[in-house]
Image 1: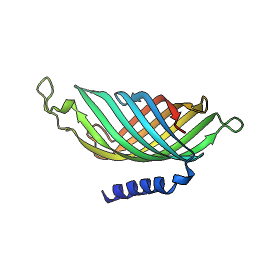
Image 2: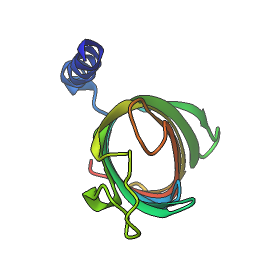
Image 3: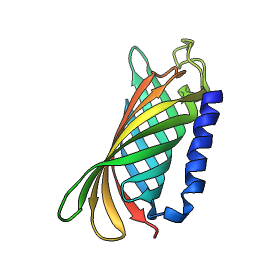
Length: 179
């Protein structure tokens, strides 16, 4: 818990001390594949300069674990993170790739909160708060000064999840630059 508070404090202080150097701020939305189902993600990016930005994301997944029994589950998380540009097209600067990571805090709902299945079987898994870390890769295609297309890939590591510790997300989306 102390490490989580320290990381959050570092994230907030980096935003506060870089107010004078803001290159731009942007919002984005993406949708795509999450393990066993679909996911959507909304992001706010605070660009510290042309090559790095702090990101705050909200992620939701709707899925169904298909095994001996089909068990529906939902995951809702908030993700503070930090991204660096690792590649950019040299001449036109139209294409770029960003790499980053951060923390994951949220809630998972298993079988809509019910501990029993329709056939009477009892689940050991329970709905609970989850936390962990993530690594992300974002490909960006600049359309004009205001919009970019995104290709996103994230791998989440949920330390205490009953669904599974590793959880992938891949999606397509759009980013709008506020200023």
